[in-house]
Length: 580
Image (tube, rainbow, N blue to C red; front, side, top):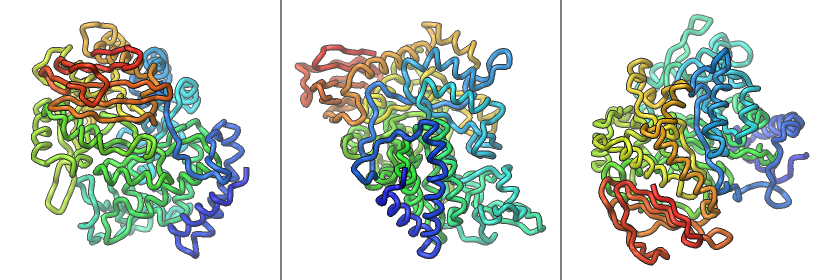
């Protein structure tokens, strides 16, 4: 299909903004040539299914998800290797068939490529599957049961890659692919998410040293996107992921992409332009793929990646995990209520990916401006008492907390509670995430009710390992079958919540939502009306004490008395209710 004039104009405008009036037009032609080259294979793979809006195509603000859609986040080897030589991906596929297929429509694979560190996020080869996990055929088989989401780690790559080797050798046209600066470079204005030095020295083949920009670790070298060939390569990879079955592409650490001296190098206007260009490429080919930006930053900055409906299709709801954590730890859901009430209406803004836990920690930055620092500091101390760890970043004032590293279930549940109480406490927070407008996302360890893997940070040497244990299938299945175990109670609770959700169109991602007035630990909202007029009331007690919800703003005939950590969902039209 020919690229529409509207798409061609957008690609040209964005290319010229990125590379100037001299290089921009030629880069735009190269992008168009790539789109033409890829069109046949994408069509053969069934990836060209997204209907464009209007005669000229363009924006697709109508992206939505039904009430029966939810996303599960997992590593490819989350349950280890299978029996008798079965690949890790194949073993995972079998477990997902039994435990996840009835509940989840989407599966987000964390990076499954060859890598050298950071549990996959230091990618060596973007186009092959890590042989220790399996093959593209394994991924394809799982893709028959789930709509897949892939990670595109485009800010940085492994220093063990061929690309980086060629960069150091000055060969294969890669001599300018990575960002370098003089060793005495003043990085004081650069926003730092870590505490190690920004520049890392590497010996070149000619004996000189290259001082390479390494935002996240010395093993992860930042690409230089001011070099057009770098961006063209990643547009090609993006299209190939769509060809391989990706229905959502997550842009990892996108906020750091474009660097300019004298700035914070965060949220650069050209970073936003790159996201818009990827979207324009997808729209030019009518790709059945949505772009999700990963920007663990304050809430207002996070929302900027939707642009004006011309940038990311979806954004993470990064403020939700720490605000929900604070409500559960402090017993005060007020900040959570105020924040949720100010979210864009579901039918006007981006689709939020609502989550509480992921492979990373619980970000501290997203609550900046939403919660007094001293109040959240008390929550941080309590999470540490419950076994959590704190990771730091560098600032001109010195190291400050960046994220909390703790399995979410252990962070929100009181230490003193019994197994059932702790499971209910965790499920109350998860019910809030599942009730809010958007696409709900659940981390694998949340679904199976894991606790902190205390040996992980000691064994592997980094805090995030506390939330990245790889349990064996046999042991996992045994615990999931034990009615007295937390794994059983949590999995059963998730099943009941997701099954109830799937039966009520009021939970459609674009269905209206209204946050209701409440007091203390109660978080309540109305979802709907759906096209049939149905309303669902979702009330949650985020504390270990009884609470009252008076329902003055809802159609409830009387007060609700909520038990400690109780979740109550009520179909106000049909009468069906769920109580956990």
